[in-house]
Image 1 (cartoon, one colour):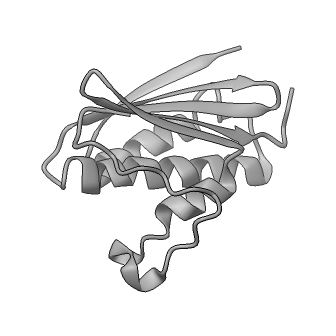
Image 2 (spheres, rainbow, N blue to C red):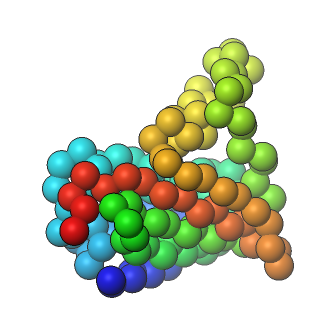
Amino acid sequence: MPRERVRFRADLHAVRDALIQLERGAVLGPLTGESRSVILLVLAEVMNNIAEHAYRGEGGEGSVCLWRKDGAVMARIVDRGLPAPAIPAATDTPNPADLPEGGFGMPLIRVLVRELAQSRRCGCNVMQLCVDDDNAA
């Protein structure tokens, strides 16, 4: 199974370029249909959150590693930005008025992924997620 790793500068233009690279890469390139769009949406949200919140728009670097496993696409996203806030529980329904910039990103991600884990290790934010793949090989 191929693995793919992309490093990106944490700014909105570089995030877009990294997403295009991932979309055409060995892991996502062969996919079609809704699963590919969902995976790209989730990655875009996570990577943009890194640019906007972990580095507060001041730049920095992140990396994404993708691979396929058991009918799913696995992703590990790492950055050295500010510590990420805790992921809201699946049962938490936030009040939209209390959320920054609309704040629907993490609740949206939680709905779209099968598994989601986040930790802080050695000064890095590490997020690992799993998205079902309707193109399972």
